[in-house]
Image (cartoon, rainbow over the protein chains, first blue to last red):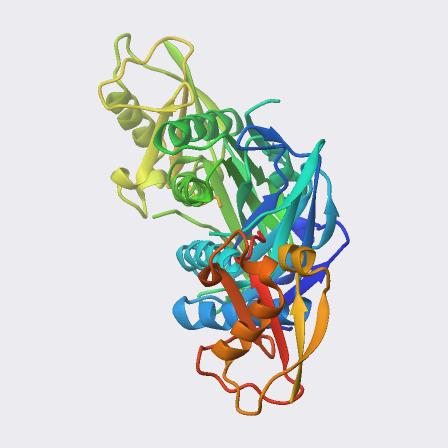
Length: 139
Length: 139
Length: 83
Length: 83
């Protein structure tokens, strides 16, 4: 079984299938973070979103983050999938799933991975409103 | 939209669909804990599992835990589903999904809920081996 | 008065039943009701301490001094192991 | 020497291109390469500080003193906003 999955896709994400991929026989729990498109951001209504990535670098960064997570936390497997292209309200944009022998490590690693993904993985979000659009700059 | 879902079912669990149910428009993240049947427990090979519940009390306890989680953490919605009956290796036994405006609260609440579920919700696991079976007593 | 007593998993196996009706004196408290049940089903404490059993009255964990009333639903079970 | 420079999202909109080839003196370091790119595309720093831009060489975040070589793939982009 492959231990790490990283994927960038324009297809809809199946959270359950992604979580299932990282399940090894010795593990009892998977923790999954599922991010999705909000209708309202700071009170403004979003029409849809567009995600763009620097794809080869994004995949390398995801790989680096997963390797770092395996160093920091007692986890077995990691799956990180980010959707690209146009997303409608409510659609899943990112899924991070972590399997571990003990659930504490899975929770910690999953939370660390989403924080780092939002900080370092070269993916950008464009918010499209009824009357305009803006590329969101991270913090 | 209903805010809380509690379910006991003998049907297979769809992690993605369960996570999706708790998504409100103002929230940006869902954290999902997915527990499943391990092949090996303390080196012994499990053939399959059987879960049994004191169903009405289990549903009440799940409701009580979710209400307590909403008091303790800034979360919007909670879904707790536990499967009952016979489960094969690798099948999902429990899914807890928490949606929150900020992911920190979703992680904390999800971890708290699985800890409390394992402590108080009247559900029991029978491990069936090739040469016998045992009802597992919690700690 | 009469109360219903439910057993699950290990306690159902040990008592050989999932549901039983027993008679208790009026005014019996939860702790005394459990003592009565354990006297009737000694296998429940043959290989474990009484303190490791859980006891519910009307689908809620019971306090020791809680009143038990006619028609109540009692339940005796081992530490839970769901998840 | 010649290097490729990629832009994404806001930086692609501002430069009007997603990919450009520029010439740099041999021995140019990452920091100087970025200065050259920003001189060529002033819109990139028209409404933000240089320090808020991210800079990669060969698909990894670049250190300021990192060597840039012929044929390298450089990329200039804003703080990421995936997730």
